[in-house]
Image (cartoon, rainbow, N blue to C red; front, top):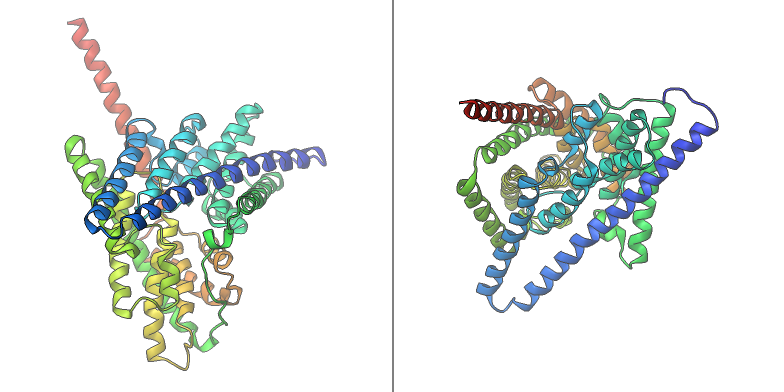
Length: 457
């Protein structure tokens, strides 16, 4: 696909990108609606049981535990490659080191993702939609019997469209492919055109389908926020300090996320499932008593931004959600970390902004600007994709005037993370996946050889 032959090749890229966009947008809309319907049913049950605290807690614990267990059964015993966010699996497929079996991944990721995200765990919907989008790209390649070059481009286009549908952010979806998958993505005019078409079509179809169903996409997916004025240039040094702090937090987040995965990976049988039941019941109780601590973060972000959470509670909430994010992802259920990271950035950013406003009232008039910058800062420090982080937050919050402080914050976070020895989380997760797969192949080969020897004896 490196040669461009007008107009035939351009038309072909547009058509295939459009097909991927239509499928990803449709599946993304259905995915989000299923979660919305389940959570609406859960809320109706909570309302019916609100006068009986014991039954309310019992129902919530049962609900979260059952959904968590069912999701894990799917990915742990049936389709292990559908666990986690799936971004590393897409990058592995683009590198040619992981097989993307769309006929397994699509149903497992959809059903498992709906269950895990409905259980109340601290996870985001973008991980499942990105992996399902990549799988749809592979599906289109198989249906039309295209060559491997097309498969590579369509997988990347589907992944970008998946991010676009998760956040209603088509430009962020395009940049995600260009920036995060820069090592794997094969650049050409046609490949980039395919990605752009897929992301735009997916987002248009998502919005059209949700509006046709009577849903307000802005209320469902965007963050309710005021458009803030840009802070004075004399305050930018505060954003440098702020970004450096997030650089350190990003390195810690990546380190302990891998530790959490390893902790659960070492457990099996009853030892594993007792932890899962404990997490499910604890999540159910937190939904009743401390709802801000669990969930993807779409409810806690507006509350933090509107000053509905006290200063002392912000830092406690940040620590609690930091831990629950690590534990939730460590279980291995389908789910992403983008949305939880945005929530963490908002909470700590609001805390920092209030303190900065108290110390420098002439420089900082709106503490919320740090909350917006914090969303992109933790994402950048963790994923090492500053452009994607900046554009994603701007598209979600409509705060275009804050691009300069966001750039300064993300640049500072990136430099700090590099100097502290941090590496992109999905590069780390892909390396870990490849090591585990190699060990599994060695173990299976060893068992096979042992059986042969026993038979010969």
